[in-house]
Length: 254
Image 1: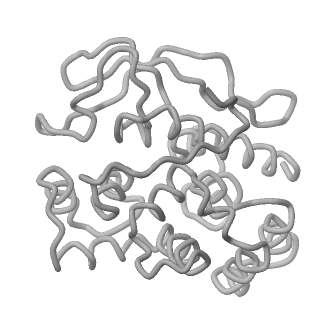
Image 2: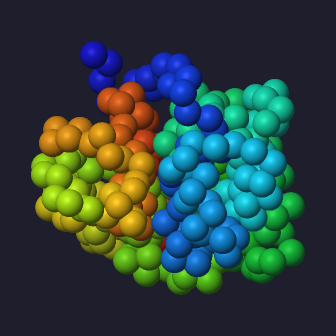
């Protein structure tokens, strides 16, 4: 097995489309009214039923925080659809498509989005993350962009809830999973992954969810306390790899 520094690549499961996988991660922040449309039940229904039709695209395009990153990843890799499953995976978890985005492309995208919104040192700080090695991964947006341009503030609890993390399932308990995961902590003024703790994560709403097959010993992705899906070892390693990368970049300017 490759070590944790190796970027592992394997084809995505053919039974799941990009839009449906996007819903798995977007559902809970949308339910909490942090992003996306106001029709959370419809979004959830699409994800549960596995339906992709003309009504889904307008809902997904309301996720204006994620969409520009998806478009950038797709454009940089000559992929027509920003909701292609490879692009969706690259943004939420990380894969080789991120390496196809050049520094200048990310810089220009950030400048177009935030150049007029940000001023002074904050503007320079955000734009400077591209040459510092940032990539259009969700962890970068959480740690270095949204914390400065969003409405949720820059608290440790917000960063912790908003980032996609990974947890080892210890027990299945009705609508919850009991998981072991590493939380974000401040250590000597820097953000690091702390010692593993046992927590509960929600896996069902109204008796349904996207991680129903999770069993003790599985890894699951977590977003705002929600179990998004069961991860393969490749996916977990990639998520950890890109999270650690962007923690290091964020710590340069904390």
